[in-house]
Length: 388
Image (cartoon, rainbow, N blue to C red; front, side, top):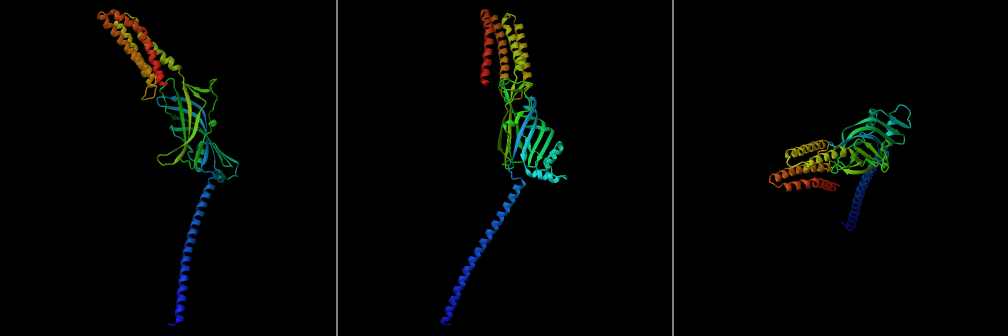
């Protein structure tokens, strides 16, 4: 082959190599273009989907539900069961524009500015249809709460107001160490039923948690509601918090409401403390009975002791089954101890007299007349200081 042919072949190879390089570069560019196109398409799809969800939810996620509670009455506080009964109004307010559009679309008549539902069964049905079944639940509720009446109001701007009057029994842990000079916290715990904090958050302004009626017996320093055995403080504590479910790991919002209840001590002073003091005083009357009448002295001491035990059983039957001692328990235990010491004093003076030590027996009897009362009062003061 001539020199011209060789030159042409070299030019051809060079041109082919250059074209191959451009082709490889074009392929990489095409691949990058396709990847960029797919990424843009996916981003656009998810953005549109998120925007559609935002529009369907009225642009308000999480929803903020305002909780209000109007307490009508607390008719019963059951100490042995650590429960209390309540009669109250519950108000819930939030905004969800989609609900109004849904309700308006179901009506055959022209849309109204507001839609109102009063029948309890109808209200519960509507709540399920609009996606708000069991908006809240009372976590420390015992059994089912009875809804006496309910009301649902849906406005065109998306505002929703739910109301119910309910009665129910709630469990609350009582602290009884200072009983009967104690005060208790009656707790009401409200949580979302199905919706975690990404969907629903609570707010509960303190001024929205109130006693619905005026105090029946106002106190000049601190107005309080009065019921059988208790005064209820009008200053109700309320706070909003969150907790993490141990089962699902989801975060939920809750509202905790504490009602302070101060025990009335008049009943315990006049029906328990005063009779027990009289009984133990009667048992000490043996110190004024002549030491030779040992049978009469023992009879009086034992009758007083058995009477004190019956009082102890009565008090225990009206208390929660707790593992620690209360101030009342210490008082009763003190009466048992000092009545037992009274019996021991009677036996001691009897044995001393039989052994011819009548002077020592008489002195012991004389000293016991003031030593036992002073020791008992000192014992109770120390017990009170420990508890308080």
